[in-house]
Structures are given as C-alpha cells and as structure tokens.
Image (cartoon, rainbow, N blue to C red; front, side, top):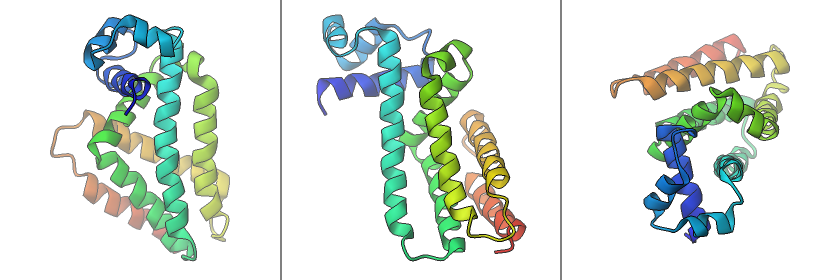
Length: 188
C-alpha cells in the first residue's frame, strides 16, 4: 500500500473512531508515521482528505457490489435478493466494513460534513437504490421505489444499532428474520 493509501486508511479509521472534528492532521501523521508535508503533498487540506477518504470507502464498497453482480448472473430474482441482503449483512459483520459504517455514521450525523460530501452521499444513495430496484422490478408485488427506500432505511437502522451494541448483538438472527420477512412480504 503506497503512502497516499496509508494516509487515506488512517483517516478513515481515525474519522470513524474519533470523528472528523477531533481528528487532527497531526494525529493522522502519527498513525501513519509520515510528516505533515507528506499529507499535504497528496491532499491540499483536511476537507479534501475527507472527500478522498469517503471516495475510497465508496470504491471498496462498489468493488464488493461488482463482485456480487458477477455471482448473481443467471440466478432467480429471489436468489439475487437473498444474495444482496446476505452480502449487506456480511459486510456489517466484517471488522473492516464495520469501520466504514462507523465512518459513514460520523459523516451523516454532522451537518457540516454532509455539506462537504453531499454530492458523494447522493451518488451513493442512487447506487444503493439502483441495486435494489434492479432486483425488485422483476417482482410483481413490489413497488420498486418504495420498497427500495424501506429496505435501505431498515438496513441503516439495523447497522446503526449494531454499531452501538454490545458484543452480543444478534446480527445473524436479525439477518435471518429480515430476509424471511422480505421474502414473505414480496411473495417469494
């Protein structure tokens, strides 16, 4: 991993754990063992570092989603929906992905950060909607737009609860019930 990627990863970790406002460039430098000059060689300011970190997080999530598209080729609509939901819950359970969810929560809960990243947040939301709508459009009982929004809202709520829960949070059982609920709701 090159220095720029190390700086981005450190920024994601520290922004997720400490928050953007409480994370100094000096703390990022210390975490990666680089000088401030090295950080400012790659990023003109802290806001640009934030944007790049958010873009990097989105790229990682998109790479995972692209792999899912390949896996889903030729599967039934039901299998595609189950795979997508399984994938989302698996990513929540992953320690690295949990860090991204924490970073995301930090960003979304701070109005000043949402302003800096608004275009990127909206693009990510469009991609999430498109992922669900591409599956739901093949289900006669589904309302693609409404059901996609409901799925995203519920998943966000589960992720938020999981982030702040103790170690005994029953994510696996919630996943199983969540998938079962949507299969019943959509008549699959």
